[in-house]
Length: 170
Image (cartoon, rainbow, N blue to C red):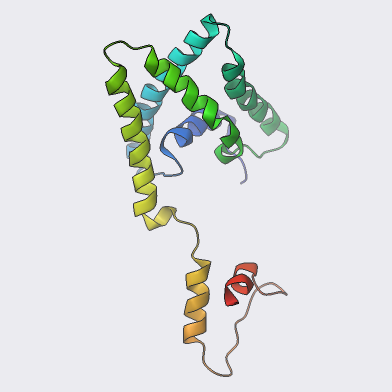
């Protein structure tokens, strides 16, 4: 329940780094988009890794690769493999991709435009679609406060009131 399968973890981590927390209900569409995005970003990332490896500037490569490998190895024992747990390697991911983009001659601007377009598309989808938003505890608490009548109770499953309710209750 808490972890991804080992085979899904690395591609999904790179996909979430590329397009964000969004996913689609249609698995065929999601797979098609994932294939395109992972192809573009993966090519640029591998190009950046190869370029820095030749220049013996491998710290960025290790910053990206070692935590991914450790997360995979640890997930065999403790099933907690999720992309958000590896957010600290995101700067290395984008720096390596930027190095990969910078090594193109005439394709540098289209490659950068593709990365920016994909990233902004994921961000726009996240902001526009309420399905991806966090729970609206403030709105829920305000709804309860506006609709509760005298002598009515708010019941919780737990012995104590739910923390977000207490916070927004004021």
